[in-house]
Amino acid sequence: MDSNQIVEYQLITDRRTIYIDSKYRKNGIPEDFTLDLHPWVTNARQLRVSKVSIPHTYYHIRTGVNDQFDFTSSADGPISITIPEGSYTTLTMKTTLQNLIGPLISGNVVVTFNSNTLKTEINFTAITGTISAGELISGNAAYDLGFREAILVASDPMISDSVFNLGGPNRIYVESRVLSDTNSLKTSGGAYALERTNTIFAVDVNENSGAVITNIAPGSWIDYPNIKITTIDLRLTCQNGTTIDLNGEDWDMEIEILGRFSN
Image (cartoon, rainbow, N blue to C red; front, side, top):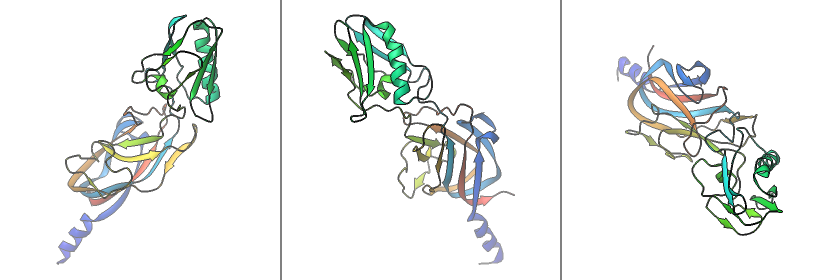
């Protein structure tokens, strides 16, 4: 091997760590943006996400996404409430639901988030007739309250068929169309390999609202055959594929790339 071949080999196998911060984006919003890459990667061979840091500033209840809760009372007919956008604890959600439902029924309502069963219990008193859960639709708050199937309850309390989830997404997915070329994407394994289309990394959420979600465990290496990368697109989503809203806050990540870089 002559000296030129040695130099060429070293260039192709050069490893660099690229630091990405959404505040330096070319366009878009913090949760869905593109940025220019300097220097370019002219011959990408492998890459992996080595670190992600995301502020837990997104709301669990979002307007138009999961803010509606509907049920039917034989005494008062269809009941529909809209939960204000925000993050909730079991205590604040209990108070909110009682305040919203109370004026719409001919009786009283007591909401309980059972700490033993993790199910939502809605108890109606001084009311005539039966209570039934309405048909659940995509994006309805009923799903997060544990009502995941249409059920008919002939007597109080109305108990959810599944456990409630007031903590929001338990996993955030980092997606990229550029970095997850589905025509050539291969992975060497890993817990989150190829879970979803365009996913390059997934972060488990173990922090409460207001904290910073950090993952410093490198992901799996992704192999690429001679791909040129000049821009990078990134998007944060939750389990159902909707974009996370960080409410104006920025996030950052580090990506390790093996390849040839422009000057």
